[in-house]
Length: 120
Figure 1 (cartoon, rainbow, N blue to C red):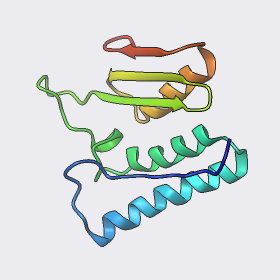
Figure 2 (cartoon, rainbow, N blue to C red):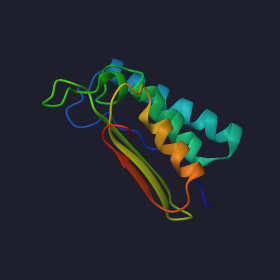
Figure 3 (tube, rainbow, N blue to C red):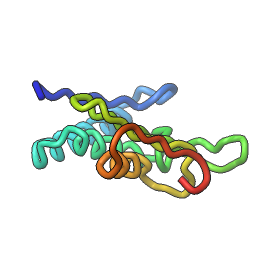
């Protein structure tokens, strides 16, 4: 599998401030902790993303921006590079951590999967 790299970003338009940098470092720490405990790069990446989804300063999870309908619709995707497998979700409502839904799809469905919209 080679050496691991974990990169997080706050998204377009996230202000650069010490508080935001600290939150990004917390995401990296969570990702590395999970990766070191499980050896699973997908689990490490998802742990990092969950920190961002749970932090309202980022346009993910609790910080999602409402769509034209006024409802927050969230997307997430997980790619397993060494196998070429992908799973993603789009336009999910009332889901705190869409990255976990995408990761569950990756774990339980063969091939590429994308679920979108109501009922996804």
